[in-house]
Length: 78
Image (cartoon, rainbow, N blue to C red):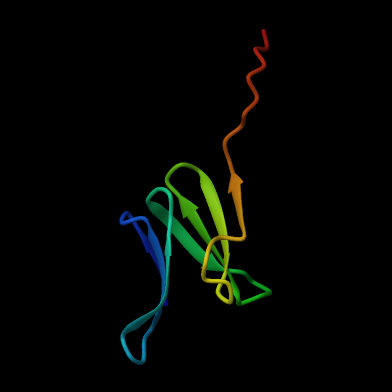
């Protein structure tokens, strides 16, 4: 079971033993999470600040990438 919450974590838990297998810290509260459709070792966590963190369950130290959905475009169009 993959879950995330407002406690700023994403967790992979076992339903058999009711135990947490992996626990990652997020920078802001988590809103959503999912496994990659092709590579089940990759998980995604959508955060409250619009950032998507990409994790590999084989690398438990940190996220692989962070994608920001916010635009840094400060152009004023009139």
